[in-house]
Length: 225
Ligand code: C5J
Image (cartoon, rainbow, N blue to C red; front, side, top):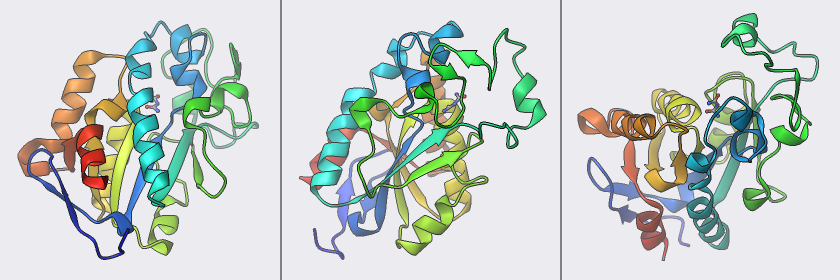
């Protein structure tokens, strides 16, 4: 793909001027504990099928993105095994019987290196694709993501992953404040709560695209064809 090539992606609130050579696919937190039956998300009473709908569209987009030789970055939410990076406020929030760092169905909950913290096999990172380990909801806070994007000349982000209203929205807002244009394919993001899925996407594209653009994987794929 030519470095200078500009493509239009049909999107809301208006078409997105896509520059593949300076764009990265940023896949947020597609981790076993959030998406797999028997994981932490399900243990909390969530319906993981709501998130799993996003796996296949992500696989198709990722396959095309890789085939075109474009840049891919993955994130994982989690903490150091000694929990030194876990704020007390986050540890106690929710008042659940089991929380971050405790033994969960897939190892210690949201701890780096544990099976549940890893990315689902369907979207497993390839050698050379950076994986950002983030202790917070946003992918920029307390990580080297901004530096990596700057070093690689990235100006646009196609943001996918889970969950729409939490880590996806927080990351899009952080990216927007740092000068990146973000496009979110609606079928590639997921929420345990259908109403938050809808509102999380509306918030991004409201007011003339206050945080970015919303489109679909089919429309991104059409532009890449
Ligand atoms: C993410 C969460 N990844 N919902 N985390 O959205 O706690």
